[in-house]
Length: 163
Ligand code: PNS
Image (tube, rainbow, N blue to C red; front, top):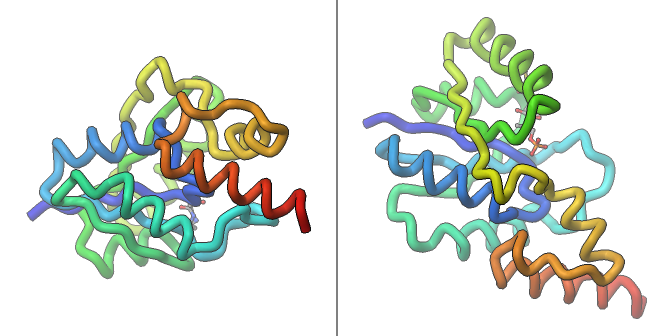
């Protein structure tokens, strides 16, 4: 059974992430969405549990997808779970340098290959950080995230502005 990892921070999951997860799920028997526990990014908007809940909800229609947390090296998590591949979305040339470097490092460390899926054009400008920023200032992100995520974003920024 071939298992693939879709790793990331998912703070929060966007339609771009979901597109990559859905397409990966068509090619592999099992997909683990691997949510990093120790992101280098300073402040998370959502807790790990909230991110996991949202991921569970938006991938509920995919029988072969599970959500797990990991910390430390991704390749150690991949080895522990018998994953054959890491799958990443490539949005633009700007993603390429860093993603290639990580893919090569992960290959050197473990022999695990990274497969890149080209992001669907309608999502190529999307990132969790931009979605957070737009949402923070009251912008409409309904075409960028699943409805449940939009609701959580609105709720979180309302909580923050009233505290
Ligand atoms: O959603 P993000 O923040 O772009 O995801 C980045 C992530 C989690 C995929 C990347 O930072 C990662 O794999 N971190 C784990 C630590 C690790 O293995 N570092 C060596 C990579 S070469």
